Length: 91
Image 1: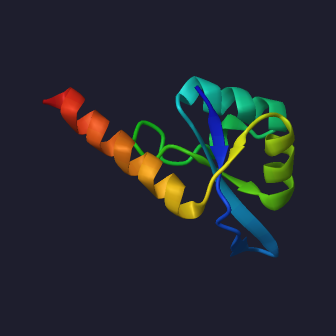
Image 2 (image 1 turned 60 degrees about the horizontal axis):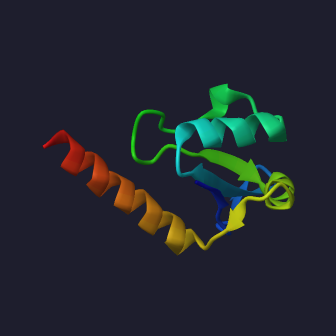
């Protein structure tokens, strides 16, 4: 199990934002707590796209805490794999 942070660096109100995702929602929420991120900022809960948007500063902290650096493209692949797994589970 792992937590991942991508390198999206999307401009947002003077910050550069990245996506933080994990192999499980529990892991994602645990890392958010460690980073001081309020769980109300969870994006797309209950879907294959569940993640947090985090600043470059928090990305660096997450990496220091053991998160794995991935590319934006790899984040898309992880999300797509989740989508397909959820689809198979629903069949």
